[in-house]
Length: 282
Image (cartoon, rainbow, N blue to C red; front, side):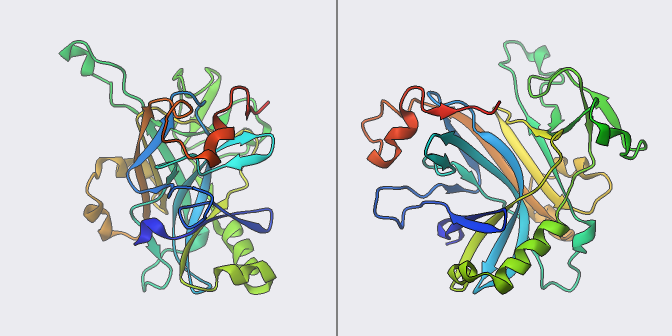
């Protein structure tokens, strides 16, 4: 099954395997196509946009959007933080398809929905608004060079600082994918991807001004060449997306009970839940 395929991270010209249930130390399978679980006794993970690639016997076959969620401790970067901690896309682009879109035109776009607690029926108005998860700071020099024709708006959502201007420009993927192709053809470590089906999440080199927030309820990411990708949010059935070649990740985010105090916590996760162990970005 696709949910049990090995997962790797590609960054700075190297791959690192994400621990899973095939390891003997007690790791669980972290992959999920529908949910992300965030234990209440851990901070929300850092979120990075990525390009997911399915490698079949050493050859890239499918591509999709990915969100790389991590927590850092002094000795480790944690992608596997338990069940449902590594989300996967449910719609992929077949690179071998006759009408596959050009890589140079593909962008990753991300949206998040954070629903408030509703006490009255009239409170529902506007409660399901989708925010752009990929934002650009208005005081960044690179912002001045961006297309002014793109729709922009200011938001005071909890996901962003009030001085953020959101520009739905997307993140390019072509150069990162080419770098990964070069790695596959020349690096000795690429032999680890030569057997079976495996996921590789390519970390995208985004400008320092780009920030990605993690909402508490739902995340949708798209890999597409559409001019107005936010319209895709209205399509809930993945079969409706089959008319166009695009990738979609759609997961709900749930805050679950404390993991550190659980009697079922595998020993290999114990250091993640130790008080004061998490390192925060400056």
